[in-house]
Structure formats: C-alpha cells, structure tokens
Image 1 (spheres, helix red, strand yellow):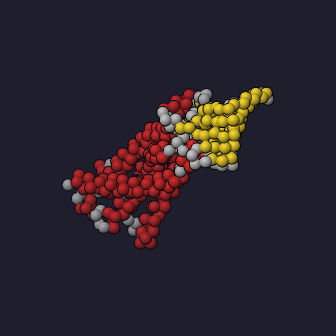
Image 2 (cartoon, rainbow, N blue to C red):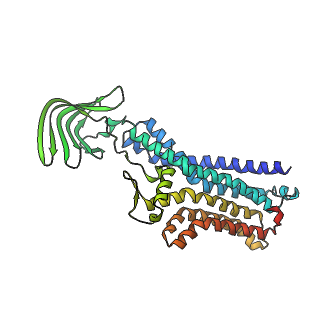
Image 3 (cartoon, rainbow, N blue to C red):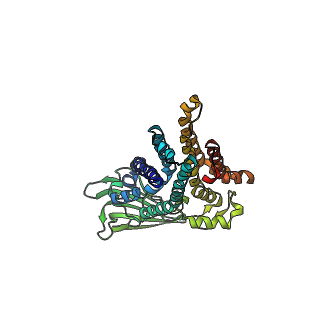
Amino acid sequence: MNKLIFRKLSLDIISFFLLSSIAITSIVWVIQGVNLLDIVSEQGHGLKVYFFYTFLNLPKIFSKLLVFTYFLTLFVVLTRYEESNEILVFWTNGINKITFINFIGKISLLFVITQLLFTIVIVPYTQNLKQEYLKNSTIEFFPQLIKEKKFSNLSKNLTIFVEKNKRNGFLEGIYIKEKIDANESKIIIARKGRLIKNKNDETFNFKLFDGNITNIKNKENINIKFEESIYDISKINSKTRQFSKLNETKSSYLFDCLKKFINYRKDDTSRCGLENSFLIKDIYEEVFKRTVNPTYIIILSLISSLLIIKPKNSIVEKYFKFFLFITGFLIILFSEISYRFIYLSTKFELFFISLPVFFILFFYTTILLKTKFNVRYL
C-alpha cells in the first residue's frame, strides 16, 4: 500500500513539473525567439536557420528554469496535499513525516542529476552546435540586406553602398569596401551590377559592370579598370560571431584547464589555450555554476518539505507558506550570484563552495527536531 501511495506522489510531482516546465519554457522561448529575429532581418539568414537556431536554445532555457520550476512544483503539490487533507493518507498508513521527507529528498536527487547532465553536457553542446550551424550557414536573404543610399555593414570587414536597388536584382551606383587585413584593403566602384544566385549552394555573387578596383596596401594604391567583373561574396558570414563563448565550451576542456591552472584560478590575466582562450578566472566561475548550483535543488526540496509541519502559533501559521516561498526564492537568487564570492579569501572561498552542504544540514536538522524523529527512520 505504501508503495502505491508514494508512486502517486512521485507521479503528481513529475507530471506537474513537466507541465509547468513546458509552459514556462515555451513562454520564455517565444520571447527569446522574437528577440532573435535579427538573424533574418539584419543578418540575412533563412527561416530554416532561424528556427533551428532558436530550437537549440530550448535546453539552455529549460536548464535555467529547472531549479525554480522544481521548487514551484514541490510547493504547489505539497500545498495541495495539505489543503485537501490528502497528506493524512500517509499518516494513517503508518508513514511518518521524516520518511515522507526522505522520499522527497530521493526524488530531488534525480533532479540534481538531471540538472548536472544539462549544465555539464547538453547545454554546452547545443549552444556550440547552434553557433557553428549559424556560422556555417549561407545568407539566403542577402538582397534584402542592401539598402538604397545607405552604407550596409554586412560583416566586420565589408561595407556596401548602392544608389539604387531595383526589385529585379539590378543595382546602380555601387561602392564596395573590403578590409582584407590590417595593412590591406580593396575598394570597388561600379556604375551598375546585379546579384547572381548560385544554384549549387544558394549563395550570392556580384556581377559588376563599368568600374574600377583600387587595391590599397601599405599606403600604396593600384587601380584596375574593368568592363565586367565578378565579386565573390559567397564566403561572407554576415555579422555572425566567429568565435565560441565560454558557455559554448565543453566541460571536459574547462575541467582540464582548471586542473592545470588551479593555483591561478583567481588571477585576472592567466589564460588557458592560445586561440580564443579564456581567463582562468572566468573558467573557474563557469565550472562553479555548472557543478555547484544544481545542488541547491536539495535545499529547496527541504524548504518545501517544511509545509507538512504546521506551526503551533496561529499567527505564524497564517504567514508560514508565504515565508517559506520567499525563503526558497531568495535561496534561488543567492545560488545564481554565489559564484561572485569565491574570489574572496581562501576561507571565504571554501565556505561558499561548501555552503550548499551547510544549508542541507541546517534545514534537515530543523526538520528532524520539528518531527521528533526516531533514529530507525533515517
């Protein structure tokens, strides 16, 4: 009988968590999707690229919201059990409060493992995948990026200006400036031209007529006139970022870096790697957020479990649920900023790293004292 009761509780928790996660994650995903429309409007990528890019944001959003959603789930489910007197089913079947809370703790461990899986493996992988996909995708809406009588910065090193941009793809009064490197650049001026779409890879090239090319290198100019010329823009990646961010980097690489430079973890200048390297200090922060923050799920489960312990004072009981919810919310906020304290003295650093363990011991001890536990139930 007890197994059936606990099975129903676990199903209620998991089903409510899934429904609330889908709802909240979807809302945030849609809002972010609207903000990412510049992938199409400003960078010229196609709708397929846009939808795939935004889709790969889902694991990150889900992971960010998981801690709060799980706390909300426990709070709502346990409140419902308590207000509808369903909680009495446990007590009448000989299940004591500490056994009930231990079961909640076991479920919470599954969510801790899930969160660690997301923060350490899934989120960095999908974040890197979406950026690589965007970086290697073609610019399908390139013609829409070229505005009449306006300098269009299509990439970091390319600027285009046209007097007229006709609907059939013909252009008039074309000015193109390409920065090749620090000492070399190219300026192309053409009376007219048109955009040509390559059928093989869906990229575009400029076919230019009646103009000249000026190559500038080390303050020396070389002018070349032409009647007809092809300017290759197939390799342009628009304004897409070409380097990886820290949150897109594999956890194994970050762990290796931190292991090698553990003595420089608080240094503002030490870096790991050569190309697109990261500060050891930033790596330390990222590893802390990926590994330590998920443990706060257990703390929140203990705070929610206090709902089944009614205070004897009626005034305290009136505001008890509100107090617990605010406490849990503040714990979530603290967990998000706790990495900022690891740069204090070594004693403070160790304290804030081990703080989740202290919180767990504190709240669990409080529960043990309130429930007048018997050792054999632990």
